[in-house]
Amino acid sequence: MISKTNELERCLIPRGKSVDVKSFKILFFRSNHILLGLTILSVLLYLVLFDQEFYSFLYDSINYKEQLYSQFLEHKKNMISLYGEGSFNTTFQQFLNEMKDTYINDLITLLIMSFVIILPWLLYLFWPQQCPVRVDKERNLIYTWSWGKLYAARFDDLNPKKQETAHFLEVRGGWGPLVISLYPAGLNKAKRVSIGSYIPKFNYQNHQLLGFIKNYLNGFTTMPSDFKPERGFLEKTLVKDRSFPQEQKLNKAIDEWLEHKT
Image 1 (cartoon, rainbow, N blue to C red):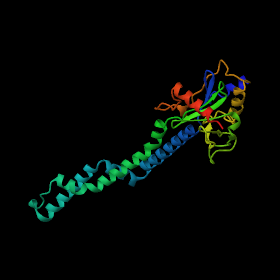
Image 2 (cartoon, one colour; image 1 turned 180 degrees about the horizontal axis):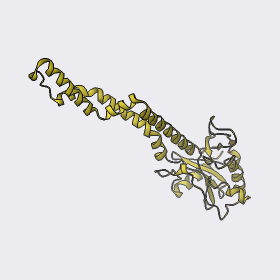
Image 3 (cartoon, one colour; image 1 turned 120 degrees about the vertical axis):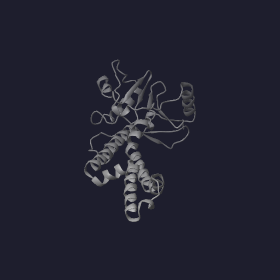
Image 4 (cartoon, one colour; image 1 turned 60 degrees about the vertical axis):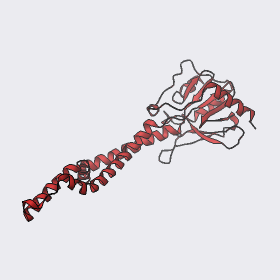
């Protein structure tokens, strides 16, 4: 089992008498944010390089004062040629105040476009990782923490599902997560939690977690002394990952859950 456990280096984090299993869903979402961001940037780059009308729109929107000043000079020239030197008394500032609304609307459109472009990258960089699922050998319990509440289960209540893929675009073949059921204290309504690594290093890596959890809780396997957790690039963001509360609060929640176990 040691070699099999080492294969889960991207999924597991040892914690003394327990092991944390990473959350799959947020890593999957982050990969989608990167893909969407790259797609939007590619479309924008194509429009800027090959669509002259779009390029002119960007240039005119950013340099609207320059465009309006050119229009002001042209309008002034035409008025003087038609009605004489004293016929045009409008200043550029007056002309700007009258005509700038159209360009302001274009600027607002440009700001909205900019927000759409950077939104996937903001979601990637600033959306925190969910709290991991902890496999607690001492209590023979599997649990996580979400929105100030403990969700837990015994192994026999996990109702596991091994998903083949994360979404319909992926080729089937065991790249999906292990999905388990965890329950709040005193309730039988399950919270389905996807665990494992995304992107997995090989087919069925996440599916091996079920066997590991069972063997770890039953004492058939331990964490190897040379086990080194691996941190994938999707986990490297600018915000701190969500985690469990302080030990005293966590222990109290676990005791309450055990008291209400039906």
